[in-house]
Image 1 (cartoon, rainbow, N blue to C red):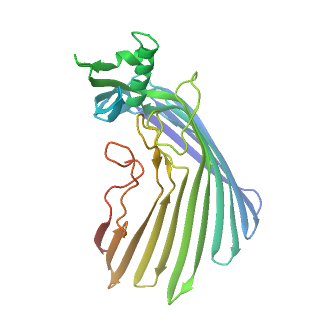
Image 2 (tube, rainbow, N blue to C red; image 1 turned 180 degrees about the vertical axis):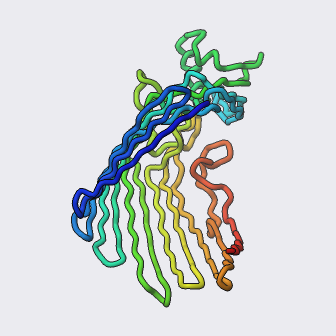
Image 3 (spheres, rainbow, N blue to C red; image 1 turned 120 degrees about the vertical axis):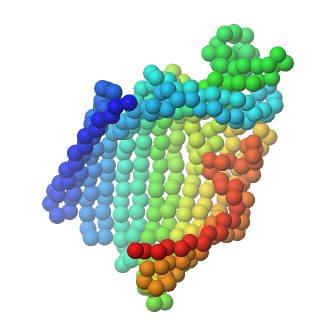
Length: 340
């Protein structure tokens, strides 16, 4: 695959308070090209308040792997009322189209007090022809619906291979261009720092709220909302509606102590055939201590998930959602850094 790209950017000062950015990128893959523009502006309304906005387009050609590669896997699926592990093969498609996207953001940054900074950003991303891997469960479900309707020889039915006893042994999948994925939400953040106990203390909080995550597999299909779901029956990924993080930090010239609190809201498991669709929220705490020994050596002691919390129980093959949760529990690390 041959790729050619060219990029240009200009920054404009429109007076003392407004700064604009204009950019463009041209990309060509194997002779097929596209120009993608971007525009952004920042307005410092007063010393303590700034407004910002941006708009841009994106373009990404399908990888060589998605066009001509193959990926074998053995997921757990529901077939004819029972959960089974089935062999799957996802094959590339040389006719895949490039992905296209459009982004739009609006934000504000406010500094009401010395050392305190608040910001809010609303964002929207629209993806077209996104290259994704088909869901094995979706193909199985469609084949079952075709059987129930009395249809024969459908595309979904032809993808399944069964043994003489009727057991599902193989599902053929492909990398495909999804019609569209549209998502929008809000990011909130706060930062505060001050001198404390002979050093510098700071606190930072970030929150992401996903308002919309609409998935459309093809132009004739209805949009499916994937917010707050594992999206196992479509091409989406697990997407809790709310996530947050709090960081507390104190440091002086020789040592630093950092604590992190991670929060993920509860969401729904859409896996076929389960009895409990709920996945609980989770809060974990990490700690990190760094000590300088001399002028060029640092020792670090860290603990991830210090309370050793198990991932929220979910009716997956291994009892948890591997996209969102970490099954390892408490992880202790010791680091040594030498600067030259």
